[in-house]
Length: 403
Image 1: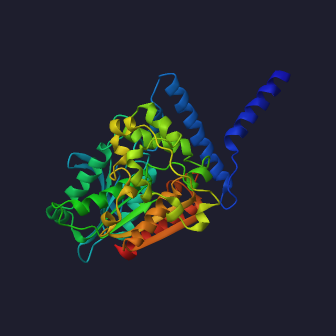
Image 2: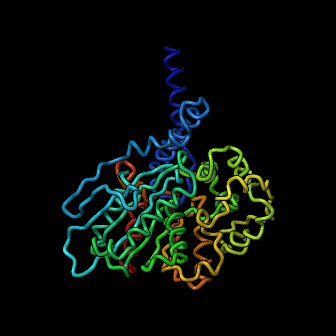
Image 3: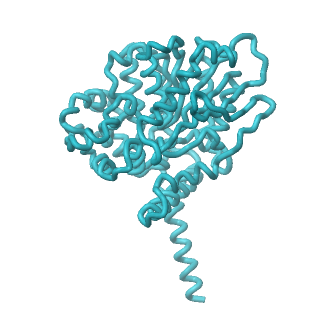
């Protein structure tokens, strides 16, 4: 009996360790957030063990979440859903069944997942695209770009760019009954990164005649230079996306070489030759006072030139859109940016919104003080977070008003 009680006590203590996490007071439904965080932390520990034992790459283990959440393309009374390819890249296409008085709107959407995880067919992304298509009576193209660790930058960017460029052809827009003046690119997290990069690249592409009307960036990752921003420090161990996991995602986007991840973790990966780029991410100038949180800005500590020579992608604006110059930001379309208070990527979005406004781009910036990274993906099943639904509705309402 004593041994059984001891085992029960140890099991209970272990369960309590995984479930209980200090949750910010302003987060609603704290127990739901605790369970979500516990599940992700357990999966991260499993991935770490599998990686160390050489059984499976860290990201491949996390990819099991994507596999578990996959749903086949299923049409309903409102939307026809199909898997197809645009420009040899897999996409999931959502076509509204409601009659339209004229040409329809369209959204090209890029899912999140740190360029290593995710799928357009995951339940949350399928729900988001289906909801968007039905509410806006719009065509939605949800892109399944190739992922790390098998593929590294610029493959992910090239996939989403080629799909967008293909879709923007007048013949393709006409085929799907889309108004060329009402097209949007959108994405969350890593997908927000890709959407911002695509919007920038389209401005420079003389072959593309159709212009985007809007871009929508949901808690986007936008810069690789300073991984020690106030939001990175303040939210180092907050729900879903702790700092070291974001560092893993960033480094894996460019290489599986652990030397880049280690340099990024210590924030010593940028060579002195690239020091001029820090002006674009200098949070002491770009963040409002309330988000500086009494942190003190210090000059960068520079790293080896060798890493930048081997993996130049982390200094490329196509991977880090905040590194674009002010002149390159001018002409970008009407922009929606969502940031969350309890998110390591918070300051990326805040700085980008500010820089876009300074460059004359009209911006709507919604800052959710009661939300954490990825919150819009937890609106189904047991999670069913109220704040996730609120932000999802706000995003779709903004599109409905502006697209």
